[in-house]
Length: 397
Ligand code: AMP
Image (cartoon, rainbow, N blue to C red):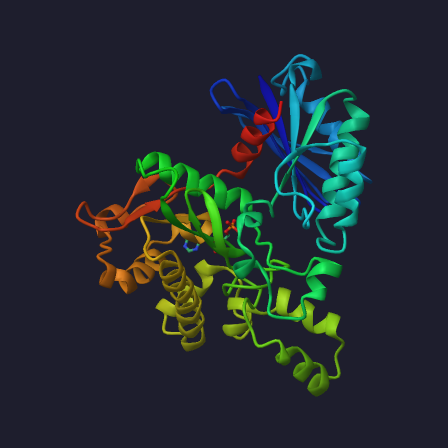
């Protein structure tokens, strides 16, 4: 049983073909610069070298067609025909209040994804284009939409409602949704299995620390709180996003700098976070850490502030759950940066959490990094959103 997973961005398309009998990836790749001059596809049959095709891809339709062509190519392909693809799983960013679960796509589902364009203006249109392109290029296949927001739909009202007039929730669906949901669900689920925690009651915190970053708390796999909100701007300090700020700052900057709200939001999304805090040095955590180690004060403050907010969230989540069984680190920084993991964990010795420095000295490998007598398990657990989407697709077949 082979499942194709597609993740369409506004000018890109990532794909993986996964054999679900053993959950092994057969081939993967990336189409870039869709709709822009210089479109190219990088494809890799697993176990072989990557290769690149430069070919115009004016829309996602040509990109999807090229992906199907390359998957059946006699030299670089891994299947004989598209008949060997049993279903297609699509990452869809925003499901609004309408979708609380992944779903098999039909006309009504496509309409509803369209209704959520306002909530995910950069991603949802591209996600829908990917679905439509698959329907056109390989008609008759089951397409499944897996939303980034459905994990957050498990929250109770006290966690997902903002303290603004209730009518805005009723009229416009303004609430906390949370993002990276597929990752949070996958990582918390794997943590429960790996650490043999009680699947109904395990209290798990997942720190998804990449360029975009979010954190979630779940009990028995059900999300009780998560840091991102109506959009991915809320919560932790990120590569270029501010995370939590006093909302009045927006009006204040608008007035002082004669800017529109849209311009300021663009600054909060693209020029803030550690990039802003480091006075424009970099949005890449490696650069910030290197500069910090060379004595750059702004880089040190950026790193300290980043960790400070993560610690505040973890502490808050432990409090609302009245405990925690496992804390998991995932995504670019979480998987690769032992310094960040160490400094965060050193703030939780008061609850009996003990990191094993030797075990923590590792990158990108699934392993428990807490000491054997730690009261809380700490796991380095690489996320795998593609596999999670493929599993959801399989479940709905
Ligand atoms: P992601 O969005 O999950 O791809 O994560 C990208 C982020 O991970 C970038 O900001 C990188 O700087 C960061 N990253 C990757 N490797 C390391 C590392 N060894 N130390 C610190 N940050 C890293």
